[in-house]
Length: 340
Image 1 (cartoon, rainbow, N blue to C red):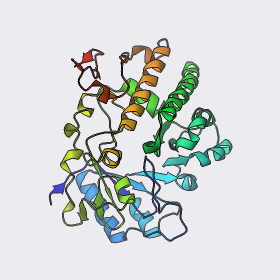
Image 2: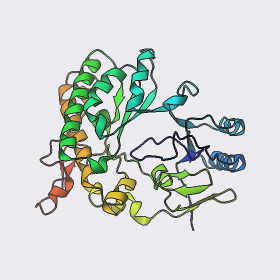
Image 3: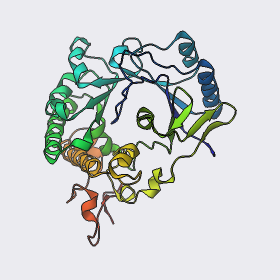
């Protein structure tokens, strides 16, 4: 197997690491004891990262790591992703919230400026805008991840669009009052001039507690076959499936929903191919793109939005609808001109 380079690595310090994206981890928040990464393996990973300039993000579960692991982590610059249960223990970490956790935020100070990851499933979609209003003022950046999208119906997608419109209306008022905050699915697309996807398997890998390498934590959580291992003497000895590469995704390379995560785990699960997105993913990304376009148009007198290029209106909400059109217009380039 080849030795891979990576810009950064996600390190699951235990089997019960918090899920923070579309996937679930069946070992998270269960009574069974976690299997922790061996201290010698973690030390080798940290040494390799320091030598190669690799960024590290550590994923924790609901329990603090053993003291030996905590001391090693403190040796290296890093990011932490933790569940709500550890938000007080790690004040600088990104905090993952489930819908059930939002009620606990009432006790937080209004200037709490953490980066929050909010995971929402179908059942809680009708409360999304209300949850945002409860969270507003208590985060610097809010990243929204929808779970169970493989079960989303057309009605669910319409509901999501309506909830995003409600969030956008609240954001407009906050921006008009001089507040500055980010909501990834609404504000990212406004500022992007090129794609910014997840890039799992391209720019980063995930290392399990046993040292096995996976494309991302979702594959680890479903006990997928690893793509390789971390070897202290060599580094990431792994081979990413070739179809994970962005250049192998014909629809995605021509799409300007640049904020879309392009989740290869979802694609593999829903279409059987790493490089072919599901209808749900494309529809959701274009619903978010349209909500961003409408919000940006409403912010045309507020800095810095007044100086941003407009987002081109589209006449479709799923790129697959364009197959067979002549010519197939897929979006816009950074100048705002149609991209053929």
